[in-house]
Every structure is written in C-alpha cells, then in structure tokens.
Image 1 (cartoon, rainbow over the protein chains, first blue to last red):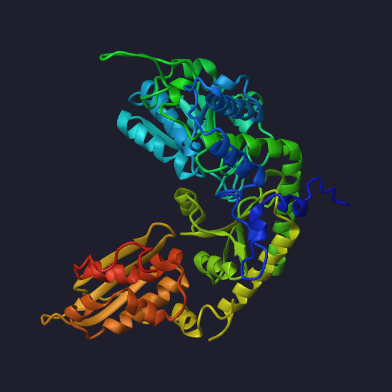
Image 2 (image 1 turned 135 degrees about the vertical axis):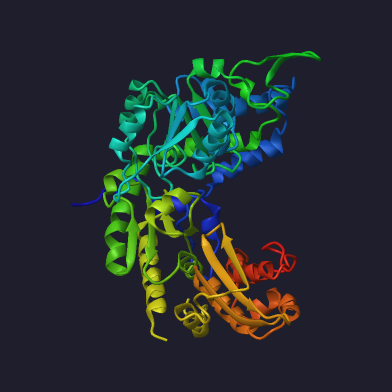
Length: 416
Length: 132
C-alpha cells in the first residue's frame, strides 16, 4: 500500500533556521519535540516584528503602535480559540504555559470549590504539572487525591476509573496524550463518564494540541490547557480555556494591573473575563509568536500532521526492535492510539549514556523521567529514553536513531 | 561515538569496584540525582584515627555515575578524613578522563557529593555549571 505523504518534512525543514546549522558535520535529528518544538521563521519574524516595529504595551496606549500591539495580542487570542474550537475568544486566558494554566485552575477554581473530604481524580501517567498542583490543593483542603492506574499496554484502566467515579469526585484531570508513553487517551468517553458522575473535567492538552486536531466543544470538557512552546510557538506562551460560566464564577488568580475595573484603597472590582486572570503586562511577543505558529500549523492542516506522525510512529515501532534487539519500548504498540513518542530502555545502557552517545551523532533525544516519576515507578524504571516526532521529522531521522542505538547497544555489550 | 566512553569506564560500569554493603559501617549515606533517578548508597568504615578502613557502595545509574563511584571508592581507601575532604571535582574528572558535558556533571559528581555529605563536608561542590 502506497503511503500518501501529506506533509513534506524536507520542505518543512527549510522553514526552520536551526536546520541550517550543522552539528558535528550533520543535520540535527531533533527527536525531543515532546519537550519543546523547534520554531519556524514565521514565529521568530512575528515576534521580532512586534519588538522592532510596535513594541508597546497592550490595553493601554492611546496611540498607533499601542493599538497595533493590542490588536495583534487579541488576534492571537482569537487564533488560539479557533485552533482548539473554543466558542469565543474571551474564554481564552493567556498564560505562560500549561503548568501555569493548571495552577491557575487549582488556585482560583480549586480553592473555592474543593472542600474537606472532596475528591480530585488524576491518573498515574500525568506529567508532574498535573499532579503537584492537585497535591497542594488537596493537602491544603484536607481533600482526597486519587489516581487512575494504567495497564501494561499503556492504556488507562477504565475499570479503575469507573470505581473512582463512584466516589463522586468534584474534578477529574488528565492528559489527552501522555508525554511519558505517548498513549492517546479516550478523552471524549472519559469526559462523558466523569460528567455522568457529576465531576468537572480538566484536560491537559500539552501533547495533543501540537499533534492532532482538537475541538474542546466536541471533547465536552470544562477546562483545557496547553503550552505554546510545544506547538512551534515560543516559551512563555500558552492558554487556558474554560467554559465562560466557570470563568465568570472563578475568583482572580493574581492581583495587579489590567485585571481590575476599579481600585480603591480598601477594595477592588475586577475586570471581565479573560482579563480578570491576566494581571500585569503579558508576554505580548510570545502570544503573537504563538498566533503565527498556529497559522503555520493551520496551513499544514492538523489532520495531515497527525497522519504524518502516525506514519512515523508506526515505522518506529516496526524498525527499532528489528535494528535494536535489546530495546524495550514502553506503552502501546498500536499506532492508532499512540502519538509520535517512543519511550524505551536498552538492556545494558542507561538512558543518560544513550542520550550522550546519540548526541555525538547529532541526534537529540530526552533521557530521564520526563517529569513523570509516578509513571516511571509504574514502569519499574528509574529513567527512560524518549524520542519524539513532529512535522520536521522524517523516516530518515528514525533510521539514524535506529542505527545509532544499534551502535550504543554493541558498545555496551562488548566484552571487556 | 565509540571514542567517548573509554574502555576503562565501561569496565568500571560493568564490574564496579567496591560494590556491595558493609556489615558494620561507621557511616551510611544515600545520594540521589533527582533529575535522572541515579541513586547511590555509600557505606564507610572509619577507624578511631579518622582513616577510611573500608568502603562499599550500591546503587543504580548511568555509566558515568557508576564508574565515577567505583573509581572514587578505590581512591579513598586508607585515606584520612582530612585527605578525603580535599578531594574535589577535579579529582573525579581526572579519574574519568573524558569530556563531561554540563548536563552530565551531576551524574559524575553524585558519588563525590554523597561522600562529602557522609563525612560532614557539604561545601565542596556547588552548582553544576560553574567551571564546567
């Protein structure tokens, strides 16, 4: 069967300045996009455009460049809303990253709505950013924090989830896609079950928004967060979406400028959503950069992005065990419910040594626990290696990875 | 890539010296590198004159951290605590004899940090990126 390549990674690489650099005489095989994505020139140009041509504050200046800055910042908000299918731009709160968005919800919504003996449910495969804020909240409130387990194949255990839902949790929070093992979770089904049990649902979309079409209205969740820097955008950009009625009810997160309507010495009335949650001068350049990144991805087509990565993960799951006999790949072997993330261990070489040796071949992978220590406890590994893909990745990158891993394997197996 | 890890390092990694436990250690100290999960438990036997009479370690980790622990524990046997206190980053890097990138320095220094902590000297090594 011929594989239709909807994306052309070689052509796409021409849009990224970093691929003009040589590393040890070779093109970089960047296989750490799950940590952060590379940035196309359209993003850096948009940011430089703001910095060089209209770098004024937003929502203040009654002069031309101030109005341009406000318009560009608000255009970015509209692009984010459109990209994730939010009903209206004012339901988008601009934040630094997914971590800040989750903390915002835990602090502003959580402190008002979670009381003693209430339950918050998360999963064992969450990123630390979707565990620690809930630990802090439930410890403060003397509430319970419960975890959905996952099975050998990297799938969330739905029986365990349903048992936990019987405790009538106030909130269920989980990742649409696991950053640790790449599982694409059945978000829609789980949201429906959680709603039936009376819980609100927060979806961590950090690994979903960059890699597949997302529509928060179809998912029917209540909160949704993602990071711009994993979505071809700059660090310092990200968003929280929540249903408008929830945002209206939520108290502010941080106090300061721009989030107020009137300030008196003893009391303050707050601005409308989303500005109520955006105290202080925001990272305007980052927001504008993210807007440009979302335009770029929209032009590529998110269905095509997913199809491309599905092809890559399928190829990797087939190729790596052939070329690297001692590899142990964690998580599901089905490309249908796996994002472009291969997490693995070699029998004789520690992930750190693997990453260091691959770096010598201009291949960048992640080694460590990927901010998922509970997940690694479950896998029975202190650390793992992770290769992750994006629009500029092609089969040649995976061939280079397989070849280099073969060399590492032979080096460590060599009798001394 | 073959030239990066010298055979000596791989040999120490596969067959670390002084790996195991002491029955009656004077001091036991655990060290961990939270970034990567490398762990070490160091056991020291120290006599009344303040000499290291024996040392053993257990742990899991990468070749750099394990080889570095293997070599360091060889170095300190029979040394006085004063001499041990003088050991520093340079000695560990000399032992390894390979290029250690800033990101891997914590792996290399885990055994030294744990040793310094075990002998009550916490000041020896600060930060992973200075003088790297």
